[in-house]
Image 1 (cartoon, rainbow over the protein chains, first blue to last red):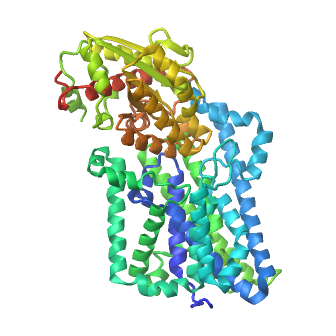
Image 2 (cartoon, each protein chain N blue to C red; image 1 turned 180 degrees about the horizontal axis):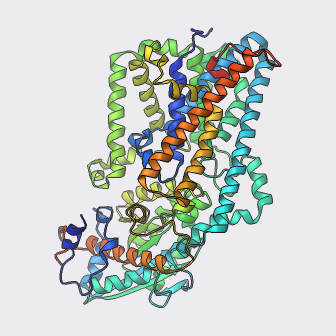
Image 3 (tube, chains in turn brown, purple; image 1 turned 90 degrees about the vertical axis):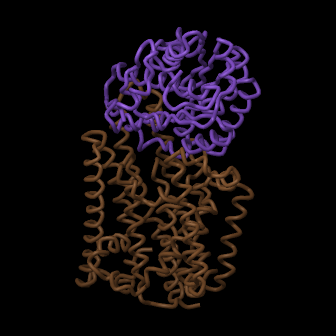
Length: 386
Length: 252
């Protein structure tokens, strides 16, 4: 099955860029601006968007490589990408350690004696750093990259299968998801517990994205555009919105019938609850229905900032994690007034856009200048990023 | 809003609590009742057991015993004080089983003996922080909560859950979210009130009631925070224990 179109779908870049912004906003603790992010209005959040689109672009970029240069070359490129992400993760870890070591030395409020115990691991860095390099110890908000690394390492055989028998590959992925729920598979973490984003669960969304990229979306398009499906999607989003409101206004909770509560809670993020998948799918259906692929506005200046971020997702993501640390640092050390929070949020996004634009310019310059090696892919295919 | 809250507190109260911490009344709403406490108040004898970890004590306070003996200024002692004021003709006794660094599961293990020792009408159970710090499996955390509530109920005690403190400086290091949500959900399922300490303290931080970012090493802010928690907790207990339809403004 060949990819149906070689024209790049800017919607992917746009929504991945937006997802990266939302992840940044959500990662700054106590950020008033994070009220605008989608996790507050339904079951799923930006993570689903990010993982799905990452799967989509990975299949798009490496699927072509596998078809043109074979399994070995494509796999090598996927693994190289995984290594890059690992290095980025370790770099962020170093920044994180610097931040908390500072907090540990400067903060000693008796109200928070218990909470400061979280810094005890600094007392035995031998164990902690080793566990971090093994991806078992993952500080707060640093769970997505390890998930991404694992999904990529495991991707080559999956891609091979997807190119030959897409339906079987998707079925295999769904089976793995089901078995995960049945046997409660997950990967152990340090010091206790398991991975916050269970790879056995989240692979489903990644593979589904890949499946869509390799022609699945085309097969589904008749369904996606049917009025019934769009209607169901809207109804589901309204339902999720109503439930989400009861989280913020406990007074409304009494209107949720007990059987509904029993049926839906807890909505499990670690294991990618079915309700979350459905919520993401509903959002995707609405998006595809109302934002056509050839929408002229996609090429306008207005959407360019988000699109350029989406095209350089790894760099933008890492920048976002770093900036969320920095933003929190500003809140604690300088000011946590709402005005500061708004300022920090917008400044952070502006920096993310600036960095993405700079990388874009670099790539362009390297191509123009006929650098040491010829460009590997056509200009700008998903920014060359998967 | 502040004025409204001031009007709400009846003039019969012997000592007006500082209004500054009563900014979160909507966060104290609970549709669940505390029937054992109602009975205990009618019998003029109310025993409360506070089980908790490090954020239920202040430096220098003893770990367990009678609240008034153990660290006079941590919230369990303030709770006893506030309850005694609100229920002048009831004999109120708050005992504590508080040790730092305990997970919910560890507290559950100690629960039966603590319950049989003090025979409380109410178990106030503070937990969640240590579980979040150790990233305990959320399922196991929920199961521990289930078990603890069942043990308390079968020992004839009502339960009020208290979630983690809002701690802005360590927010980027402790992921409280899942555990706070689990507590909210378990409380709903078992129909027990949740004292949402996290949201209340967060609101205090936002309104500037307390400077929770402060790097002070002194105890004064901590003591005032605990005093307020004790008072609000007493409000919640007394409201949820009212026998008839709950009146909004304290006409006691």
